[in-house]
Length: 255
Image: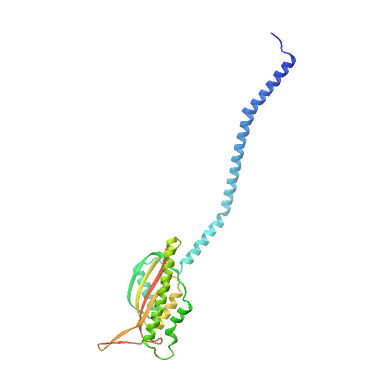
Protein backbone atom coordinates (compact mmCIF):
# COMPACT_ATOMS: atom_id res chain seq x y z
CA UNK A 1 0.00 0.00 0.00
CA UNK A 2 1.34 3.30 -1.07
CA UNK A 3 1.84 5.77 1.73
CA UNK A 4 0.34 9.23 1.45
CA UNK A 5 2.71 12.00 0.88
CA UNK A 6 2.95 15.00 3.10
CA UNK A 7 1.21 17.11 0.47
CA UNK A 8 -1.73 14.68 0.16
CA UNK A 9 -2.10 14.53 3.94
CA UNK A 10 -2.25 18.33 4.02
CA UNK A 11 -4.92 18.42 1.30
CA UNK A 12 -7.02 15.77 3.13
CA UNK A 13 -6.69 17.75 6.36
CA UNK A 14 -7.76 20.97 4.69
CA UNK A 15 -10.71 19.21 3.00
CA UNK A 16 -11.80 17.71 6.35
CA UNK A 17 -11.64 21.08 8.04
CA UNK A 18 -13.69 22.59 5.21
CA UNK A 19 -16.32 19.86 5.47
CA UNK A 20 -16.49 20.21 9.27
CA UNK A 21 -16.91 23.98 8.92
CA UNK A 22 -19.51 23.67 6.17
CA UNK A 23 -21.64 21.15 8.04
CA UNK A 24 -21.32 23.15 11.25
CA UNK A 25 -22.48 26.29 9.44
CA UNK A 26 -25.31 24.53 7.62
CA UNK A 27 -26.67 22.39 10.45
CA UNK A 28 -25.82 24.54 13.51
CA UNK A 29 -25.25 28.19 12.67
CA UNK A 30 -28.04 28.73 10.11
CA UNK A 31 -30.80 27.11 12.24
CA UNK A 32 -29.54 29.04 15.26
CA UNK A 33 -29.64 32.32 13.30
CA UNK A 34 -33.15 31.57 12.01
CA UNK A 35 -34.29 30.85 15.56
CA UNK A 36 -32.66 34.10 16.67
CA UNK A 37 -34.53 36.07 14.01
CA UNK A 38 -37.85 34.49 15.08
CA UNK A 39 -37.17 35.28 18.73
CA UNK A 40 -36.11 38.83 17.83
CA UNK A 41 -39.30 39.38 15.83
CA UNK A 42 -41.36 38.02 18.69
CA UNK A 43 -39.55 40.29 21.12
CA UNK A 44 -40.18 43.31 18.85
CA UNK A 45 -43.86 42.43 18.56
CA UNK A 46 -44.12 41.91 22.31
CA UNK A 47 -42.43 45.27 22.91
CA UNK A 48 -44.87 46.98 20.50
CA UNK A 49 -47.82 45.26 22.21
CA UNK A 50 -46.52 46.37 25.59
CA UNK A 51 -46.17 49.97 24.43
CA UNK A 52 -49.67 49.89 22.93
CA UNK A 53 -51.11 48.52 26.16
CA UNK A 54 -49.29 51.15 28.19
CA UNK A 55 -50.65 53.90 25.93
CA UNK A 56 -54.14 52.43 26.14
CA UNK A 57 -53.93 52.22 29.93
CA UNK A 58 -52.65 55.79 30.12
CA UNK A 59 -55.51 57.00 27.89
CA UNK A 60 -58.23 55.30 29.95
CA UNK A 61 -58.86 58.36 32.21
CA UNK A 62 -59.10 60.74 29.23
CA UNK A 63 -61.32 58.27 27.36
CA UNK A 64 -63.63 57.93 30.35
CA UNK A 65 -63.70 61.71 30.72
CA UNK A 66 -64.57 62.11 27.04
CA UNK A 67 -67.32 59.50 27.44
CA UNK A 68 -68.72 61.30 30.49
CA UNK A 69 -68.58 64.65 28.67
CA UNK A 70 -70.37 63.16 25.66
CA UNK A 71 -73.03 61.61 27.91
CA UNK A 72 -73.56 64.91 29.71
CA UNK A 73 -73.74 66.80 26.42
CA UNK A 74 -76.22 64.30 25.01
CA UNK A 75 -78.38 64.58 28.12
CA UNK A 76 -78.34 68.38 27.89
CA UNK A 77 -79.35 68.22 24.22
CA UNK A 78 -82.16 65.82 25.00
CA UNK A 79 -83.29 67.87 28.00
CA UNK A 80 -85.61 70.33 26.21
CA UNK A 81 -87.33 67.56 24.26
CA UNK A 82 -90.28 65.53 25.45
CA UNK A 83 -89.80 61.85 26.26
CA UNK A 84 -91.64 59.39 24.09
CA UNK A 85 -95.33 60.13 24.75
CA UNK A 86 -98.44 58.09 24.16
CA UNK A 87 -101.49 59.59 22.42
CA UNK A 88 -102.90 60.46 25.84
CA UNK A 89 -99.64 62.19 26.75
CA UNK A 90 -99.75 64.30 23.58
CA UNK A 91 -103.35 65.21 24.34
CA UNK A 92 -102.49 66.38 27.86
CA UNK A 93 -99.38 68.28 26.74
CA UNK A 94 -101.04 70.31 23.99
CA UNK A 95 -104.31 70.83 25.84
CA UNK A 96 -102.49 72.27 28.84
CA UNK A 97 -100.29 74.40 26.58
CA UNK A 98 -103.34 75.98 24.93
CA UNK A 99 -105.09 76.51 28.27
CA UNK A 100 -101.98 78.29 29.57
CA UNK A 101 -102.56 80.93 26.90
CA UNK A 102 -106.32 81.21 27.48
CA UNK A 103 -107.24 79.26 24.35
CA UNK A 104 -110.07 76.74 24.65
CA UNK A 105 -109.52 73.44 22.80
CA UNK A 106 -112.67 72.23 21.05
CA UNK A 107 -111.40 69.39 18.84
CA UNK A 108 -108.14 67.42 19.01
CA UNK A 109 -107.11 64.79 16.46
CA UNK A 110 -103.81 62.89 16.56
CA UNK A 111 -102.79 62.31 12.96
CA UNK A 112 -99.64 60.30 13.69
CA UNK A 113 -97.41 59.28 16.57
CA UNK A 114 -94.52 57.31 15.15
CA UNK A 115 -90.88 57.40 14.08
CA UNK A 116 -90.49 59.91 11.24
CA UNK A 117 -87.89 62.04 9.49
CA UNK A 118 -87.15 65.51 10.83
CA UNK A 119 -88.23 68.17 8.37
CA UNK A 120 -86.18 71.30 7.74
CA UNK A 121 -88.22 74.48 7.97
CA UNK A 122 -87.17 77.72 6.33
CA UNK A 123 -87.95 81.24 7.51
CA UNK A 124 -90.48 83.44 5.76
CA UNK A 125 -89.09 85.68 3.04
CA UNK A 126 -89.80 89.44 3.41
CA UNK A 127 -92.77 89.31 1.02
CA UNK A 128 -94.38 86.57 3.06
CA UNK A 129 -93.73 88.51 6.28
CA UNK A 130 -95.44 91.54 4.76
CA UNK A 131 -98.42 89.36 3.82
CA UNK A 132 -98.56 87.91 7.33
CA UNK A 133 -98.61 91.37 8.89
CA UNK A 134 -101.61 92.62 6.87
CA UNK A 135 -103.97 91.70 9.69
CA UNK A 136 -102.03 93.78 12.23
CA UNK A 137 -101.19 96.88 10.21
CA UNK A 138 -104.83 97.84 9.69
CA UNK A 139 -105.81 97.95 13.37
CA UNK A 140 -105.63 101.70 13.85
CA UNK A 141 -109.40 101.76 14.24
CA UNK A 142 -111.47 99.88 16.78
CA UNK A 143 -112.52 97.18 14.32
CA UNK A 144 -111.51 95.66 10.99
CA UNK A 145 -113.52 94.03 8.27
CA UNK A 146 -114.11 90.30 8.15
CA UNK A 147 -112.95 90.17 4.52
CA UNK A 148 -109.53 91.66 5.42
CA UNK A 149 -109.00 89.21 8.27
CA UNK A 150 -110.07 86.24 6.17
CA UNK A 151 -107.83 87.32 3.26
CA UNK A 152 -104.85 87.78 5.58
CA UNK A 153 -105.45 84.42 7.20
CA UNK A 154 -105.65 82.73 3.79
CA UNK A 155 -102.39 84.33 2.70
CA UNK A 156 -100.64 83.18 5.89
CA UNK A 157 -102.01 79.65 5.48
CA UNK A 158 -100.97 79.53 1.81
CA UNK A 159 -97.50 80.72 2.77
CA UNK A 160 -97.21 78.04 5.47
CA UNK A 161 -98.48 75.41 3.02
CA UNK A 162 -95.87 76.44 0.45
CA UNK A 163 -93.16 76.24 3.08
CA UNK A 164 -94.45 72.84 4.23
CA UNK A 165 -94.51 71.52 0.64
CA UNK A 166 -90.96 72.75 0.08
CA UNK A 167 -89.70 71.16 3.29
CA UNK A 168 -91.61 67.96 2.54
CA UNK A 169 -89.88 67.63 -0.84
CA UNK A 170 -86.52 68.28 0.81
CA UNK A 171 -87.31 65.67 3.46
CA UNK A 172 -88.30 63.16 0.75
CA UNK A 173 -85.03 63.73 -1.10
CA UNK A 174 -83.15 63.41 2.16
CA UNK A 175 -84.85 60.15 3.06
CA UNK A 176 -84.26 58.80 -0.41
CA UNK A 177 -80.54 59.43 -0.07
CA UNK A 178 -80.45 57.91 3.43
CA UNK A 179 -79.11 61.08 5.07
CA UNK A 180 -82.27 62.21 6.91
CA UNK A 181 -82.36 62.10 10.70
CA UNK A 182 -85.31 60.36 12.35
CA UNK A 183 -86.95 60.81 15.74
CA UNK A 184 -90.27 59.97 17.37
CA UNK A 185 -92.75 62.55 16.07
CA UNK A 186 -96.36 63.34 16.94
CA UNK A 187 -98.59 65.33 14.55
CA UNK A 188 -101.71 66.75 16.18
CA UNK A 189 -104.48 68.89 14.67
CA UNK A 190 -106.57 71.08 17.00
CA UNK A 191 -109.43 73.52 16.80
CA UNK A 192 -109.26 76.31 19.34
CA UNK A 193 -111.38 79.23 20.43
CA UNK A 194 -109.88 82.44 21.74
CA UNK A 195 -108.56 85.84 20.80
CA UNK A 196 -105.96 86.68 18.20
CA UNK A 197 -103.74 88.22 20.87
CA UNK A 198 -103.63 85.01 22.89
CA UNK A 199 -103.04 82.97 19.75
CA UNK A 200 -100.09 85.17 18.78
CA UNK A 201 -98.73 84.66 22.29
CA UNK A 202 -99.02 80.90 21.71
CA UNK A 203 -97.18 81.23 18.37
CA UNK A 204 -94.33 83.09 20.08
CA UNK A 205 -94.16 80.50 22.87
CA UNK A 206 -94.03 77.56 20.46
CA UNK A 207 -91.43 79.32 18.30
CA UNK A 208 -89.18 79.56 21.38
CA UNK A 209 -89.46 75.82 22.08
CA UNK A 210 -87.12 73.33 20.36
CA UNK A 211 -89.42 70.35 20.92
CA UNK A 212 -92.38 71.42 18.78
CA UNK A 213 -93.39 73.56 15.81
CA UNK A 214 -96.66 74.81 14.36
CA UNK A 215 -96.66 73.62 10.76
CA UNK A 216 -99.98 75.16 9.69
CA UNK A 217 -102.79 77.30 11.07
CA UNK A 218 -105.90 79.12 9.93
CA UNK A 219 -108.07 81.68 11.70
CA UNK A 220 -111.69 82.54 10.99
CA UNK A 221 -114.48 84.50 12.68
CA UNK A 222 -116.33 82.51 15.31
CA UNK A 223 -120.04 82.15 14.65
CA UNK A 224 -122.35 82.78 17.59
CA UNK A 225 -126.04 82.00 17.98
CA UNK A 226 -128.36 84.67 19.40
CA UNK A 227 -132.14 84.14 19.79
CA UNK A 228 -132.22 81.35 17.22
CA UNK A 229 -130.15 83.21 14.60
CA UNK A 230 -126.52 82.88 13.69
CA UNK A 231 -124.43 86.05 13.69
CA UNK A 232 -120.80 86.38 12.68
CA UNK A 233 -118.57 88.39 15.02
CA UNK A 234 -115.75 90.53 13.71
CA UNK A 235 -112.37 89.34 15.10
CA UNK A 236 -110.28 92.06 16.68
CA UNK A 237 -106.80 92.20 18.16
CA UNK A 238 -108.08 93.89 21.29
CA UNK A 239 -110.91 91.44 21.92
CA UNK A 240 -113.42 89.08 20.39
CA UNK A 241 -113.12 85.34 19.98
CA UNK A 242 -112.07 83.66 16.76
CA UNK A 243 -111.96 80.05 15.60
CA UNK A 244 -108.44 78.69 15.10
CA UNK A 245 -107.33 75.54 13.28
CA UNK A 246 -103.74 74.66 14.08
CA UNK A 247 -101.41 71.70 13.47
CA UNK A 248 -98.66 70.91 15.97
CA UNK A 249 -95.62 68.72 15.33
CA UNK A 250 -94.04 67.47 18.57
CA UNK A 251 -90.55 65.96 18.56
CA UNK A 252 -89.78 63.35 21.21
CA UNK A 253 -86.66 61.41 22.19
CA UNK A 254 -85.86 58.24 24.07
CA UNK A 255 -84.48 59.10 27.52
